[in-house]
Length: 231
Ligand code: ADP
Ligand code: MG
Image (cartoon, rainbow, N blue to C red; front, side, top):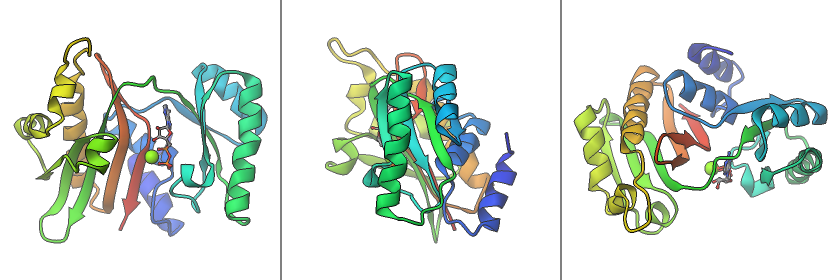
């Protein structure tokens, strides 16, 4: 597995404006941010082999420097439960992508563990021209998209600031647990916020970072999609 520096270098050399999902997830892993298990398959047989190693159900996704929004082009298939499902989806994804962009460069197909549904949160970072990197937090889905219920802090953030960010969003009670909803692992989110802050401080070539969604469980959390945009 490449180091974080090697990953950024490779993207720069190839004049790419963003990291591929497996690259972004490797960066996350190396920085202590939990992600789904994943492997990049170069052919159908490999996709099946990796699905078995990772364990069903799995998700398949296109890996291409020409495609940043994967599901917009039919480049994501979730909840595959058998080798036959994997083989069919492998071909379907390549077909969908080629229909969208005939000359798209294909690096491979990402096989990854399907994260069980849970409370979804979003951790992000942007680089403000005046203040430098800032870290963002919110709950997923309508909370971010419709209600804009998000909060920001200029990086680097302290552990107290990370806790404040989580407790100050309006949707916080959903994380704390209510009625038969079990409480989410708040400390796991605190850790992700702190590690994201460290990552964007250390690698100033990051223009934008988007961990969306992160599934948060009673114990632990898992990043399902990671996007890192470069300057
Ligand atoms: P996009 O590039 O379109 O944002 P994503 O990787 O976010 O692609 O996949 C689209 C959606 O599919 C996600 O928002 C999530 O709902 C679902 N999904 C993707 N990967 C997984 C996974 N490993 N486990 C569970 N759901 C997933
Ligand atoms: Mg996504």
